[in-house]
Image 1 (cartoon, rainbow, N blue to C red):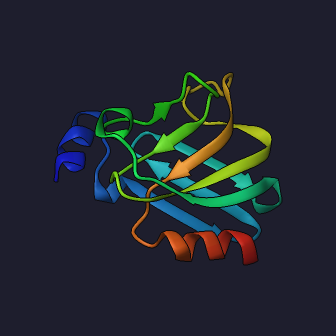
Image 2: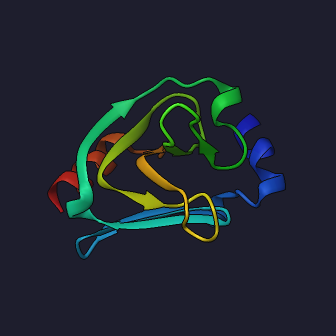
Image 3: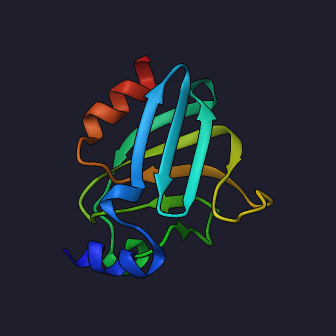
Length: 118
């Protein structure tokens, strides 16, 4: 519940968050933020977590350490996707590119499997 409340002012709700894998592509939407990339652009898939609430709750988060992007709805587990070529995501013009994306989804193992196999 704390993550839902923290996300509301930013338009992050269950109806505005989704991850799709299919047709050789990955699409992730998190409120007003979205990314898409070819599955072939994903070099490494790993399960990560736990995370601190402050670093993950609310809007999409940009890591100042490595420019990674996080779409988080919980602090327990997520799937970190390391890209071959950085992807746009946090800014509306696509100027800032992210070398990795972390997604906290209900089924981390299922997402990791889907990204790796098809």
